[in-house]
Amino acid sequence: MTRFLKKAGYEVDAVANGSDALDRMTSRYYPMLVTDWEMPEMDGVALCKAVRNMQLDGYVYALLLTARDSKEHIIAGLEAGADDYLIKPVHEAELIARLNAGRRILDLEHSLRVANHRNRILSITDALTGAYNRRYLMEQLPRELERCRRYAYPLSVLMCDIDHFKQINDERGHAAGDDVLQQFAARAQKSIRTNSDWVARYGGEEFLIVLPETTYAGAMHVAEKLRELISASAFHTRSGDAPVTASFGVAATSPSGPDIMLKVEAMIRCADECLYRSKQEGRDRASGHEIVVSPALMTG
Ligand code: GH3
Ligand code: MG
Image (tube, rainbow, N blue to C red; front, top):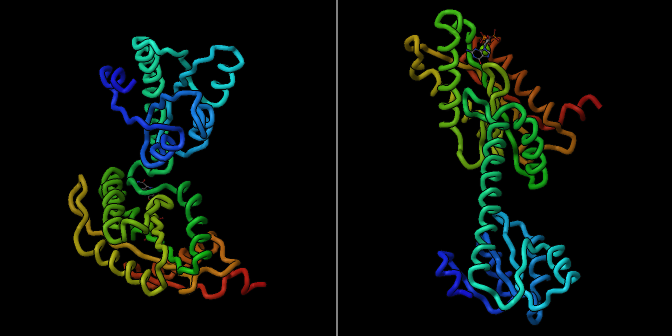
């Protein structure tokens, strides 16, 4: 069988029984499985069932080989998760033809998977800036909050708003405004930890940066770093260089994590209030608040 398959251009790993096959399939993804039905310990049907219950990187096309050709027998095999079967003795050309048919299914499944992945990325990304969009933010931030609560880690959010952005649009045009938004997102991306922190576009020219496992002091430091990076050099737009500043509002939980009552909405509101304070106090600055007791508890 290995010889047949290799001759037809397949890469083959041959194993002696069902549980060895299962072991191999857990350690890497095999798109195709050709298995005998009748085997000691784990037979081919049990193997197919087990494979269907595994979380794998792609679909596994399973072909069962059997010596019995009764209808009930074959139906049971297909119902257990086999895609096709062959009655032994195996005819070389037929085996290859059936596997090639299986490959067409695998190719389709692969393109579907790629398309789904691309759609998922599109559905959570802001098209202009490449930052996450608000939908993703409202989906993911409650999870971050929950995770920080479970592990008793702090969580901070940083609300950013470009100063006098309307003026940039008015003086240089909307397209130049778009250039500024793109570069703002790029600079924000540059000033955070790539593996845990993330940036979402909250509204028109407002961005929210999520900083897991970051205390109030840490978040204020990030805000200050980004504030400096924004004002340090002009933004290049299609209508020339534009000096830009931004204001920031930080909301942080206590170092031991969010309390039981704290909600995402309250945290965002708190960051927004701090941002408002930064605007009031003259813009191009950061203000923050550490939420020691959640607002719900304070009013309760
Ligand atoms: P402040 O310093 O108080 O934040 O003033 P501001 O002018 O930045 O704030 P305001 O909220 O008055 O104006 C925000 C502007 O952002 C108005 C809106 O036209 C513009 N805007 C929102 N979304 C986009 C976008 O996708 N592209 C561009 N170019 N402009 C946008
Ligand atoms: Mg603004």
